[in-house]
Amino acid sequence: MTKILIATEKPFSKHAVAEVKKVFNTAGYEVRLLEKYQDKNALLEAVADVHGLIIRSDVIDSEVLGAAKELKIVVRAGAGYDNVDLKVADERDVVVMNTPGQNSNAVAELAFGMLIFLNRNGFNGTSGTELRGKTLGIHAYGYVGRIVAHIAKGLGMKVFAFDPFVDKVVIENDGVTWMDTVEALYSECQYVSLHIPANEHTRGSVNEALLSKMPAGATLVNTARKEVIDEASLLTIMAEREDFRYLSDIAPDCKVELEEKYPERCFFTPKKMGAQTAEANLNAGVAAAKQIVGFLEEGDETFKVN
Ligand code: 3PG
Image (tube, rainbow, N blue to C red; front, side):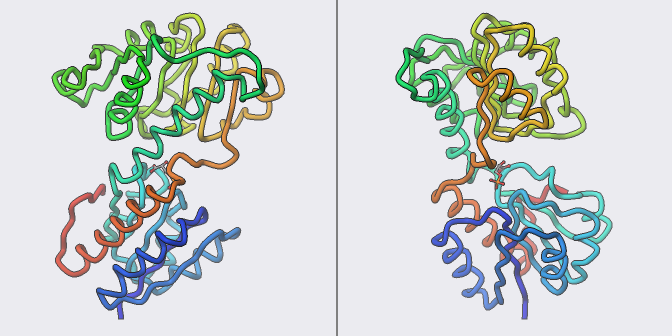
């Protein structure tokens, strides 16, 4: 019998899990659930005899892949797959997929939730600022970036975007100003929302040279990955510019220092929660389940990333 493991240190909603199970039960598969595990050994044991695996930000490294002797497919229920060792997966003939777009709305909404929270001084009753009329730069115009643009326009912001992989016409058709360089984006925009993946080209790429270009009242909101920020640059810019603010759904390594020194100018969610909504759990979880069944039954490799 085909065995599937849903391994989510940060669990899906109960309803999403039930719907994911239905997809596998209909296919005649056995489903196991490993949630909130504290210890990697629990994951190593649980993967031993499964053929398919659904994960979120759970780390699937060479040790896990080595322990998963029967594994044929891993689906990262979400967008970023920097938590999976693609090279080792390739070597072991394990297909890796993601579920692009399925949790994007949740992430985009969180970016604005954090911006409004900071602009209103943590809802402490003091006078804050509004987003209407301000400039917003979208750094990477993928699924999340597009929804961010749509929401920002609804809020009356002036919206700009930079993405070397997206045609100018796609950006302009959304009523967004296309920027030809990343430097131009940061120079123009008081607010910048980050949506780049973490890979060998982007790690540490948001650095002092870029951040120092931002105009007065600069606010960077990161719902992407902490690794894309050069943290030494972040510490420098926060120290040098009293107007610079940083919000992130993924706490930086220098979180404690930033929170101690600049409590009014930064905010970090206690746990990554951009995609943590009932809707995103359901969409990404069910998409992942259907992709596993499609691959194991029909060899459908749509959304394969390795
Ligand atoms: C993603 O890449 O899809 C998001 O970062 C969500 O990650 P999560 O599933 O761990 O919440």
